[in-house]
Length: 72
Image (cartoon, rainbow, N blue to C red):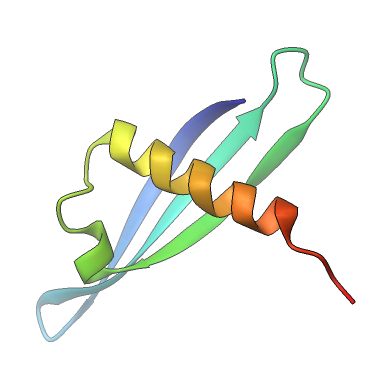
């Protein structure tokens, strides 16, 4: 699955980062599966994970968890 980070939106409170939204799009090699959305992070979760590689890993982990959830 190819993940593209499309934007990183940082929200500030009192001049300091408060929360972050990592917007992404993703697709498989044949483009049979397409996913897009955003992953919310706290400022603490984002700190130290600013690189695209780290953000892609976070998105991959969060999307995998959501796909594997079962609804009742």
